Length: 101
Image 1 (tube, one colour):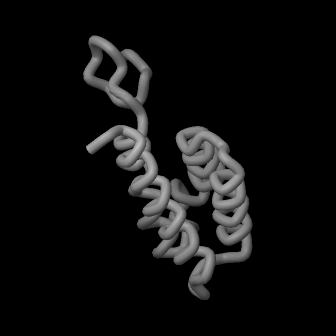
Image 2 (tube, rainbow, N blue to C red):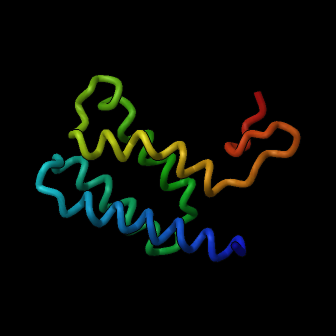
């Protein structure tokens, strides 16, 4: 698959997940605010990995304290995998997160 097609597919799939969560009645207003902001940023062309990292930052404390709604908690747990699919492998490390250890 051509890289642009893969990126487009991932972006579409990610936006669909955001839409579904935003419409869910089982999430908190704060979760909805963060998800809506992320959706709007992506639709405006923001670099998706940056948006994902911002979401992770917003949700981390609640995730640690088990305060995320179940559906957002499940979504939050998929964010590292989504990042790995989007970002190219960092040369020589095998890491797709671009951070050599």
